[in-house]
Image (cartoon, rainbow, N blue to C red; front, side, top):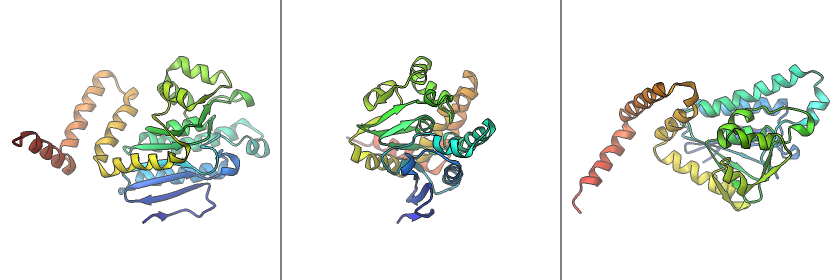
Length: 264
């Protein structure tokens, strides 16, 4: 049974079902672009999802014809008069991005339609991205005279390399799904009407499997740049030792050993 914790009109819907948290961007009339209300809802949704003991996998998806168009430029023009206001909005959304990327819970994004501007940062805050075959991904910051935000300069460069990140950020290109996969931005391309189903399959496999091991593998990779190589090796050793002490790992190791030594 799914327990929907948000009212239908919430700009970010949240539901929890059997170990899976689903966060749905829900401003379809604005292509799920962020305004202040949506930013607050995003922070509430992400921080709750990563703090619950019963959540073993997270899905980030979106309502309407697009995944996320970044910041709502119309709302900016109508409500903002100074740069610090936009800085404050970006910093607020970043709280949710950090919650996802710093957690030890694997995150899958289900993206369809267009992903643009800061929407790229939302997409890349996932650990595994599934997109529809008609998806398009592009920067579009320069069209309105703005610079990358919402982790785009960091996550995009980490995903595709510095040169390709610059190619995307310094042009108005919208990458088709196959090129986005070739570049390393997304993991899978499926028919448009299968994106949600495939993302749920992935999340279900994580939630029903060794979710703790998946989550800490994600944590090791996501935090790699914070450590020297020697410190990373030490952290790997510490992490695998801690994992070995968990009941889940004990059971899985014993079962693997039994299968490997059974007469054939």
